[in-house]
Length: 241
Ligand SMILES: [Zn+2]
Image (tube, rainbow, N blue to C red; front, side, top):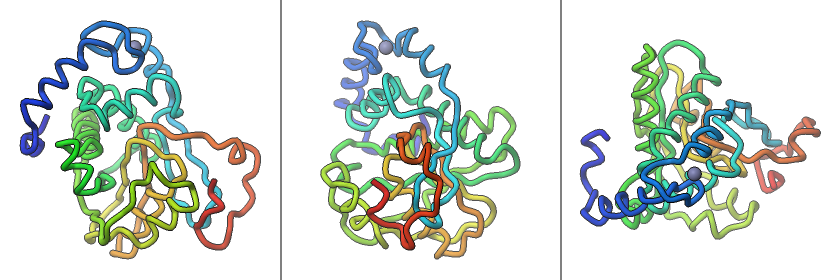
């Protein structure tokens, strides 16, 4: 992967990669990579639009539904340095970006990881996915760049420990962005409530970005969103359960 990620990569990381490579991180089957059934499952995924009942929710696409092997691969990539999963997850992300924005130049902006998370994990998994997805898109002829234009402006609680209402509150006004020109697609590994992508796009728009959308490797599908497309609450808020 790009040299930018060389910093913070320790022998422990390399050893973890090697050890994790001994079984498929999507299902645990012994082997040295993602197993064939998991690869086939990923290949069968198709990008889709992510719907959240929140006013001014940005256009969001995902590479496939957050379930089965992709769910385990995303978790392993984020938490266990399972970099054997990077190419497969980045391929899904690239498909999602191309679904949302099929042509023309585009700037990918990774959702920022907290400093604490990067310190604990030793690397920034979303930025790694963004750069790998950009490489794939560039190889296919797209004009694409990755710019880490978002940053946190205050300390965040760990989203995983919070319920939906608290996630929205935790993220409200939590990010700032630098001004970018041209179409921007915020990228992340998974979209659940949508609170992170909403805040990222809010910060980019506040910085003057005119065209801001988002794409993720995978996303949950909320049953309510399949059937009820009525207008959401007046403000983006806890109603997005
Ligand atoms: Zn597998």
